Image (cartoon, rainbow, N blue to C red; front, top):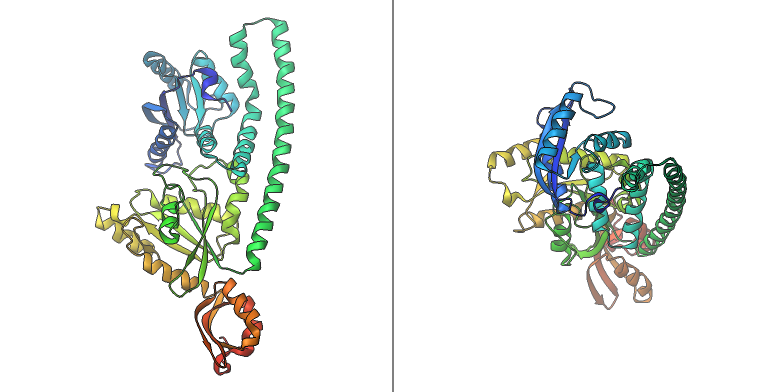
Length: 432
């Protein structure tokens, strides 16, 4: 990937360009361009101009027709803007063609590269860094010629220099392929390590919930509010990339593991979905999912579809999913809320900021665990304290009284632990 300081150390005046094809729904290109503006702003790049161009048939060389290309090139040169950012994915050839038309002095990139740069700036742990580097190198490999063309312009012509450059290009491509193979091996080891950690957690069987949703929906804030933790929660896209798991005690006494996952976004580069499988895998193995959405966003329906699409790709869409609309305190148009309630009749509406609806969410979590555990009453003999300890470890004890005849326990017992304690059910009650 071409870093901004490779061409110009002060990339800060961008022209954003969206493309609306004949099958693009009305208004979608503008909405996506607004989202691109927020992404670009996250990198500290100023947006000087943004525009949606309608095309009947994308041009293989430039995406746009020759007339529009000349018009945009002249406008960029006239204003002295230093970067052209497309909302559409671009081929390496298209990027080279645009940069050639712009005289090699303007950086031409697309949404994918912006997202990769944001992920790169947010990665904190070794796992996230490996995942980002893998996605970045896979994106960069077919664009190596583009990087070398910039070096050629800096060094000047000459047949011997060009031949040497091509030889070095081949060496660089081989080095990148070697690094990609090594990264995939390291990530596989990370996956195995995560699986070992998960198996250790499962020795003490606890139900788990993964909070999934569009980026900036408030997932980290919800985790903090429910579990009384201090996970980074910032009002910006992709504030956290690594899954964070915390324990919380539900009102019925049941322990629940809650995990905050990386946020989704429209047109998320497929290579990032692949690279972040280890991170998103937490959603696959959770007992149930909390799909969090920003009720105040005008594009919330598209955000819903985007997240569900990724969950389907991960084969996690068949799990129990609690659809939860956050930030209702920000919705000024009550009709908007009414429409959402109509379109999503089974959804819950909350505000993490004010606490509205959180009690109901916790009750729904208890119900979702109900498929994983059974609430029972037990009288366990004093000589079977090993069972009492196992139930405590599983976070299954709601109340406990030590009596002469044994230990009286009421709790949500994991189904996998019912067999050992079934003989101690009060009144011989068998779980339904």
